[in-house]
Length: 416
Ligand code: NAD
Image 1 (spheres, helix red, strand yellow):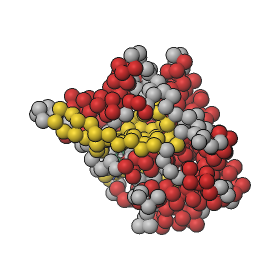
Image 2: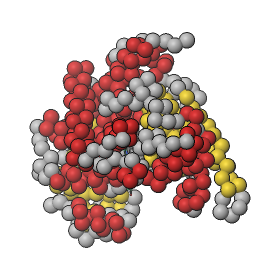
Image 3: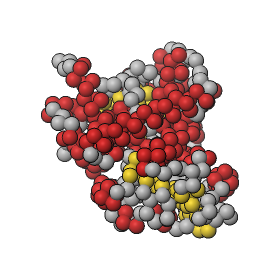
Image 4: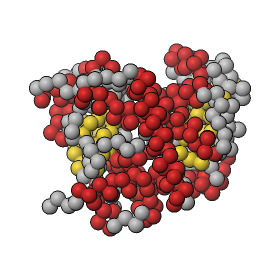
């Protein structure tokens, strides 16, 4: 796999640790470390100026052994094939850990949406959809939002696909507006899933969310909702940071008021219900629980030694470097890894797909109860595996995921 970049190599390291413990056969090892399909497309778009610009887009279906590929579409200037392939691999393991009938996929377009008009974004989305249309569909590959894509982009995507196939297809994407087949509870699902695994991990470690001090990096969809739901369980949110700064209060921040502040000011910085907190200091607060919910590679060798939390819940994808994770393990910090901790989002995407295919929609209470059951089941299975193999939760999550995909790969046999 030497043609891949550093992100994919990092994923392979995580894979190898677990695959060795599973005594994975060399052939299956080879199959699970090669992406099934990588599509590169050129998307010409007439810009508002009248000129034609050609954007490069990717869609990777890493593995579809368990079901249709599932994974978001990212619009960003730094998108690369290596990044999209790695994210598609992570989606494969995340869906398998959560025991969803999905494989892993991911898409991306190299573009800067902050510099594009709404019309240009719509034109790009429709052309990208048309370019990959043969590879997608409710039984083949079901995209969703990711960085810089949202419900509106999913609505355009769904409409373009529907016009091509000649009928309205809601189940071709998830993360749609509720009015056109989206699921209630989807917006809160990742934060809710993170709260559920935090609660289960705390119980395993002999404490409770009620009264526990929590620090959160990132106050967006995952961080803000995760913090809100933990606070509703009695947790005391003592510090929060975002792209611009942070705020702390040892007796607890008022999260609903902080959300109102962020809606107006676009940052937690300056919130009057606490004192300023420097971005880097969120990791060193005297908290029992730390939830990184911003970006990748935030917990590193530079800050890992100062972390006081005994429980880390990875709301973000890839927030801890491999080296830092080793130190956390040695220090006895319990880390709920990303592919388990933030699986609530894709789990509710699965519920959206199921509801679309049935044409029958659930109440928010039903969605949340089913999410609770799925997350608890996934947590229990990974914990049991960690104890059985005497490994940390990250290796255990990979053992569960790879084990499930490998078992079905062997059952299905070789098509040749
Ligand atoms: P978001 O854009 O809603 O929020 C991101 C937050 O991180 C914002 O508050 C932003 O200010 C903050 N942030 C950005 N740069 C920062 C920095 N340098 N330091 C501190 N804070 C910074 O994004 P989100 O949907 O909440 O996603 C957050 C993470 O969770 C990402 O890694 C994403 O891949 C992962 N994730 C999200 C979902 C989902 O359903 N939204 C599902 C699975 C995983």
